[in-house]
Structure formats: structure tokens, C-alpha cells
Length: 214
Ligand SMILES: O=C[C@H](O)COP(=O)(O)O
Image 1 (cartoon, rainbow, N blue to C red):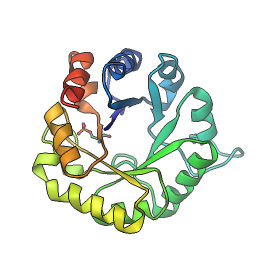
Image 2: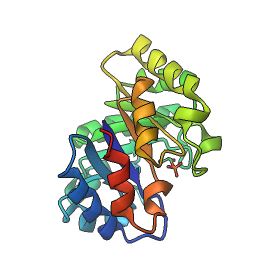
Image 3: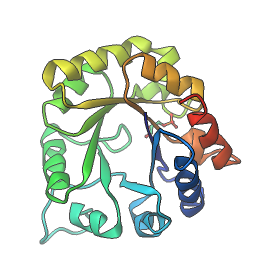
Image 4: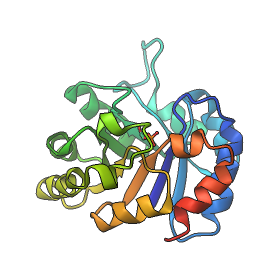
């Protein structure tokens, strides 16, 4: 299972969380990675943790101000990027452009979407993976794998019907190892989570709990 920890803009220490991700990754067959704010990618990558960007823009080198260039996050040490989070919504054409920009920079891609229909559209753009996240469950601590298992199974089916090579993750409210196992039982190949680690008093303990049953 892939466990991707999105730090959003939570007031945690991204380097400390990254060190926990790096250390717990050494103890498990699961794959752990962390997505800090763009400004912290370089320091986080220097810890040795697998580091992802939270966003890249559909642009190339040139006259762009205030944008995030895929090549820049790759140079800073990111190996992948989220695209189109519920909290960073993009138009379909921009998702397509961001996927292409990420591929140009050799970044792995996870396109987030709210529901199975959007997952099908996202999968058609050829990312490495898609992540289904019902917006109403994000940050609630109520795991999508329990509250809305059908949305995960339907997302898996939707992606497979478009492109069987696109992996499916799920997210929203995931915070325990049981949640991760339940996600896997529904066909998800990984989880995308944030508050369960970023807001934890002890991120290392939270990560250890997440991977304990894997
Ligand atoms: O990117 C992560 C998701 O929005 C899930 O957030 P959450 O784990 O706080 O529910």
C-alpha cells in the first residue's frame, strides 16, 4: 500500500514529519511519502523521505508569475505531485496540462477527484494514479472506507473501465491502520491522508499505527 501524507498548510514541522515518514518507511513493506508545502520541498527531500509536491501548474519555463513549475519542484527533490485537490480545484484542461507538465519533469502523478465520475475523467488523462476523496469527509476523522465504501469501489471500477494501468487511492478521514486495511479491501492501492498525521501530537506514532497491519 502507498501511504501519501499531505501536510497541506497545517502548522506542523514538515521536516520533523518527513523524518518520521523516512524512519517508519524503513520498518514496513508499505511505501510512505510526504507532500509538504512547495516552499518546504527542498528541506523535506533532504531528510531522505520520499517527497511529493501538493500542486504543479500547467505551464512551461517562461513568463509566468506566482506559479509552480514542475521542473522546479523536481529540482527541489520532489519525485511526484498531487494534482487537482478538492482544496486546489482545477479545470479539466488545467488538470490535463498539469499532468503533462509533471510527466515532462519526470514526476509521478496522483490526480485527486471528488467522486467516481470525476475519477473516470481523471483516469482518461493518463496519470499514474487517481485518488477519490469525498470533500465532506476530508478532515473529519470519519474514514471514507467506512462512511462511504461504495464510493471507493465505484472509483476503482471507474478507473479500471478507462485505463487499467491507473492506480486508485482513496482519502478523507483516514487515520488508523484499520482504515488503511479497509481501503485495501475495497480495491484501493493506497491512501491519501493529512490531518491524522499532520495534526497528531506524535506523528511517528500515528504513522506506525497506519502501517502496523500491513
Ligand atoms: O489530501 C488529503 C486529504 O484531503 C485527506 O485529508 P484528511 O486525512 O485530513 O481527511
